[in-house]
Image 1 (cartoon, rainbow, N blue to C red):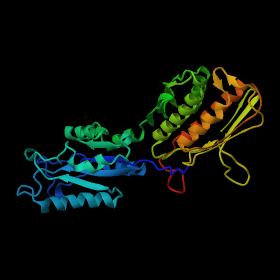
Image 2 (cartoon, rainbow, N blue to C red):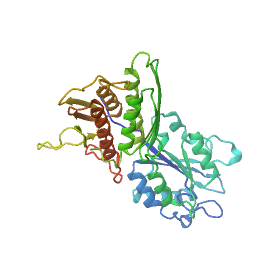
Image 3 (cartoon, rainbow, N blue to C red):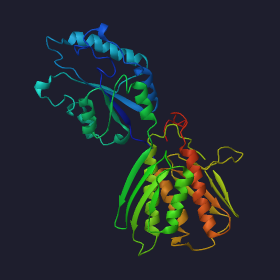
Image 4 (cartoon, rainbow, N blue to C red):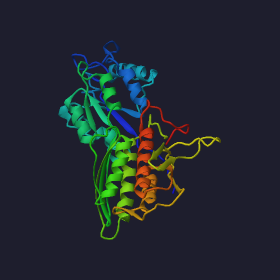
Length: 374
């Protein structure tokens, strides 16, 4: 299986007048003298672009091209706005402008979606982490119609610095549903809060192990699983691993700022180690690697000392982590020593949680890869 590790693009659709630049009393920025940028707009846009956001300008310009608003006067002021932003690194992917008045009943005037139909037809970009930013109710309604977040800009109460802070500090969350003839699964994760986990897989010890990942990973996991336990526990555990891996990967977004690597855990008489490929010739190891290249190695100094713990099969432990690794694009090597079987399995889940905690921690906005992708 080839794993590309590509993440969906995130977009900020941004109004111009009243949001990027101040809107004059006559509501027409029709001269260069009227161009006044909103406070902190450029440094805030630079922060958001550094975090991987694409910028799209979306603006209603009532009666553009008419005698009351000649194209020539608009173009001079608009060019100054765009050139100034671009000179500072704030480059917009597209600039979309509706020139009509409300009485024209066109399809391109906000909050109608005519201007952004190419985006609406494209299902590849990340709607969960994209936003529409503007100073009017029409901007909020357009964001809602697009199925993305809407942010109301207000110079005094929600200025550009606050908007950038809010977007960049939002929790990394995701929900995945998996419905097959063997299992029906819904898993939600919050990678930035450990406060609200719950588990219902029908396998008590497996619930306990998932709780170890959440607790020691410093994350929240809500797992509701209905599987064919009348057959055995295989499909339930396997498919939960797949869904959990998919949910974590989705919540990670573009992976900017993550630690990526991480851990070892002793537990009573058992030593569990989770490590990725060696980083150098001295054999220095890390816990795991959110690499975009799924690979799982599971080795023993001794075999599991029991076939089951509770209703969970010991042989499903490596299969769970393999399923999760493939779904998440994770390079993962695991090792456990001999001892009590309950301790062996629990140590592995705890070690994985601790490794995951280090790998998920954010340190700025840089992508931790010399290749430019994870």
